[in-house]
Figure (cartoon, rainbow, N blue to C red):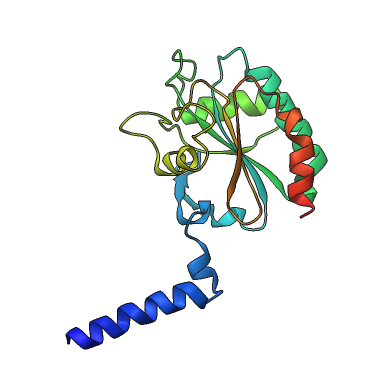
Length: 187
């Protein structure tokens, strides 16, 4: 029995080192995570395989709300057909600027911007209840900035293979990401 277990462990190690199967390529990617969308349905981040994605924590009553949603809308119009997606995660951890429920948040975004990114249910991005996806995003790109998310509209850019390639402050205009988005879409 011990020999079989050792053989199995060696086989798994061998396959992990030399196999190019997608199953072994998911470590260190967003594809291992799920999140509830704004309608309460569980969604696998697999939906973003082959896409470039901006993950952002959003709030309806923030000084950055208008500029960010308008920029996301513009980027969507320019690059959606080429494979860009924006994944927006409402969060009420910063100045209580996202107090509404999911239905009101969705209505606000649709009516105010005539645009809707991929909207998810409200989450925590810091603290003991941090959503696992956001814990991963911060782990992947937490060294150059503070490990915690400092404010609404922090942004993580993810490539077509599900790897986090950059992190941007809330004060960075999403349109400033355009050159990097273009590079990732064309690679």
